[in-house]
Image (cartoon, rainbow, N blue to C red; front, side, top):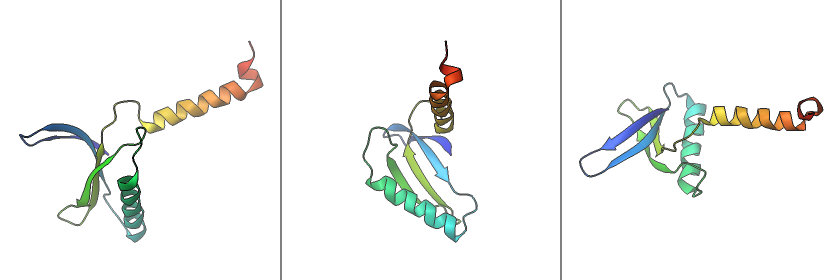
Length: 94
């Protein structure tokens, strides 16, 4: 995933470009399904799908709304650690 910016003289927009470098049939199908699901979702906590297609060489891509904040893997690690610490008798003892 790459942070990108549209600047075509009409407007400027930050976005995220997701490209699948080496897509076999299963990976392409999963990527296609992800794009279809994102196209139908409308929720403030989920990045909107802006565009998606194929690059010149046939590589699939999608462009999604950029959301400023911690990466999902950082956030999920924090949330998991927090949940573990508050549920562990040793960690919650004071």
